Amino acid sequence: MFDAVMVDYYGTMTPLNQVAKLSVPDPTMVVAQPFDPSTLPAIEKAILAADLGLNPGERREARADPDPLADRGAPEAARQEGERARRRGQDRGAPAPPRGERRS
Image (cartoon, rainbow, N blue to C red; front, side):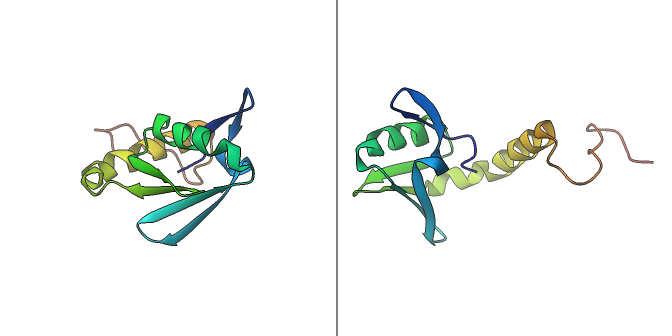
């Protein structure tokens, strides 16, 4: 989910997991604790720009609570993630046939 979140780290676009420790304290929250506290505003900006349906809040760490109304878009988000995985070649099975076609 956070693979596509890139943070502007001193002028270099850097993956979120390289500038912060990510944890999930409960099913409705993701916490990003920056290794360098001065990068917190850039991390929040990157999470918002990634358009993941998360709302970051600041408390010396970026807490991203999923928007409950965004759950309606969960099937669409899952479909988009599947498409990204197929494009990266990370799906393990045979590629799904285009819609409307059946497998042999």
